[in-house]
Length: 190
Image (tube, rainbow, N blue to C red; front, side, top):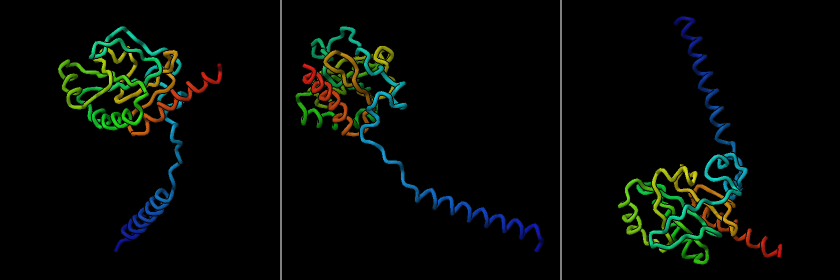
């Protein structure tokens, strides 16, 4: 056989061994441990550019809930959701369980859609015992929310105290804990 064949054969096996060693090294590395509430911190790079800034007043343009009530967003969790959104629909059972465990926590759902009848279909499909506000796609600029499901915790002063993607069930607990922490600080101040 020719010398070129032997050289290419040696190079091939050297690459196979090198790639095997690299794969073993990568598989042995442990992922960096993540803190449970990192995504709720306002200075998190991931959330800093998303949604309303922490400390900003939560906007209220006077729209009513589907039940005709005037919403009071103070000391509440605001859940931004969208009809025909698979992630949002997957979040609803977790939201309902959280609400059953924590009936004292005020929750509002901002339901975004471009077809008004989809709002009623979503409300009928999931037994929401929560106030729902109808929003249009244009309202995403008003609430500065482009990713769904997304949540805000709004303190007693009407300011955003935390925000989060709502991917896991404990995201609701973490956001509600920021409301409780704010109330404890207020009580200590007085």
